[in-house]
Image (cartoon, rainbow over all chains, first blue to last red; front, side, top):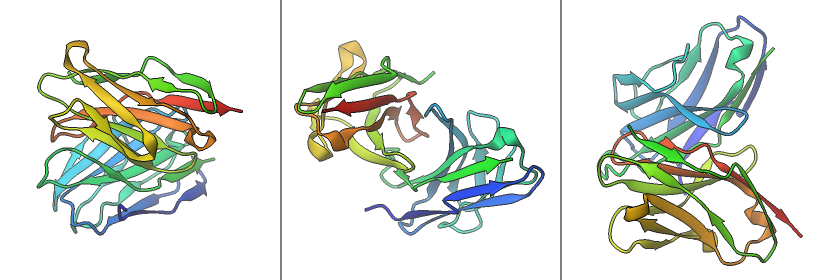
Length: 114
Length: 111
């Protein structure tokens, strides 16, 4: 059973608000990821990190930012939310030692911006 | 560039019938291949994975997949579908890099 947690699970906010989606894992994984999932299901990588103080942008351009100050924690922040940010955000982690890329996912944070 | 194609957006099968979900990939090196399942409102759960060796791999919930290098395919199969198998299914490819996912196939199961 994977131990990766996302909060909040659901969030409805107004335009212009700042939000932070939290992601924590207890598996000691070095690698962590954020995927954005469209209503039509497709997943897009928006950020990833291979360790503390390491962050990279993914394939899909995103106005969000991330930080990795602790191994277990990888929060995603939107400084000023817009309706176009409405989506599901999935956090995942993988074991750098095995280096297989196998991902363990959280249950997701569904964001609605009005 | 890495890519994954799942040709079927939506499949409907009868309960008890067999199932095959298709996945084709493009990858420059020996790929690691994965199938994930997503129930409504949930994250993705790993069904099975292929790294090397036997090209027929067994997973959870009675699923299996076969790696065919010559066809660049990694199709998912189940001999008898249960109503609880209704979900979204994603194929993914990678090798130590961030996984690339297909667009997914939605499986509906009818009585």
